Image 1 (cartoon, rainbow, N blue to C red):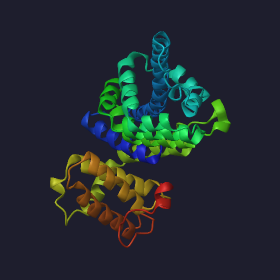
Image 2 (image 1 turned 120 degrees about the vertical axis):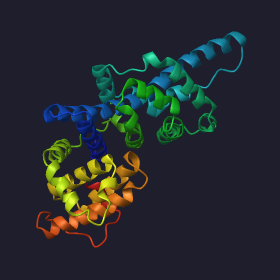
Image 3 (image 1 turned 30 degrees about the vertical axis):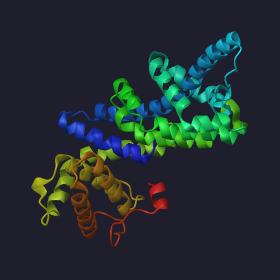
Length: 323
């Protein structure tokens, strides 16, 4: 689950913190980086567990409504939602249950939020259409939760505030973790029952090494990288550069020089996107020009042994996929 996009975000955050806090212990800083990455995986499982928590809360509501209907001799409530095939499979999922138990991650202390979310679900048109639809196929059941997640969990301000209280790491992680939750919902197959595999924390050890190497190269070669910036900034007002811009470019240079398989234009575009989130509105244009100039300078000096694109542009999907 933890891909290079998340890793780059975390490295930017941790390198900036490393300098701002005067932290000179690179080993402890690296441990902090890996810990922050593990918290993103915690959030992934926690958000999947939210679907289970809402389903359990719905059962309580149906039990109460059923008892009332029997007393008053009125129509019984629908049980379709509480026996949603996808939600039941997720509730029984071995990987999720083992992780939640080992990390003690439950929604038991946030019942009010779970109730409010279920109320919002009940009032949604998506829910109403689902209850009225006689189709109870697995695909329809799973599609319900994909739609509900996209409309009521993604960009949920109450949820964002709750998660921020629980972990400082989660506030920056949720947007990208949401994409992995949705990917997981789409991957569920009824044939796998409780043994359906969730996304692993790391696809392979190579990604974990990418995080370590990128962070260490950035810190250990900082003076050299900043010299490269100075040497190629004659046509740029380097003194007016925001400190975060320097950090972002330093990490980009580390990636260009440390990982020969990643194309230069992929690296530049990845850090341009990060600058739009973490730096000033004008930063991306400056960083684009600087990194392009630095890459050409290093290639001309024989330091950077990669093909230089004629013009830096957004990477093709297959290139980004492998980055």
